Image 1 (cartoon, rainbow, N blue to C red):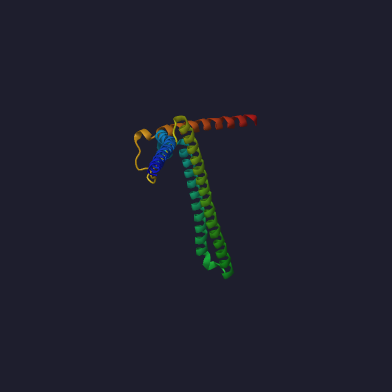
Image 2 (image 1 turned 90 degrees about the horizontal axis):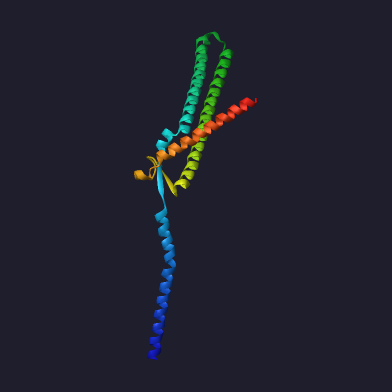
Length: 206
């Protein structure tokens, strides 16, 4: 009996040793792959403030929006001044008006003020839509270029750095802002040239 017990214990020890070996040998490739993947993962980052400052597409559209905003602001001031002039004229002539005439003028002034407020709200919404459109196109252009840049340079991740981002530090060797801005501007220059050629061709056909 004692010999049988010793034999069984020996078999169990061998079995445990085999299972131990199989467990760690099977997990080893996965661990190696994970380590290799983490080692090969390449990061970079861009300074979003610098991109906005130097990207020609954004600068051009920002200036257009600002010019339009100033034009609409001037239009609103002119309309508001016209309404103010009407009100002052009403005040000057009030003593010469009958109660019915005064009431009619007041109602007219009230409608003009309401229309001016609605007009102002429509202009505000229009500017918000224009800004949203530029922001959407800007995001699409930058992300599309970063995908291309990442593929060409073996990057898996590109982070955004700005005062509100979670990136607290990044070495200068990881900063690709200048390269990205240069590439974005080159693409924008080519797009603008193509657009100009198409416009000339369409004009010539007419």
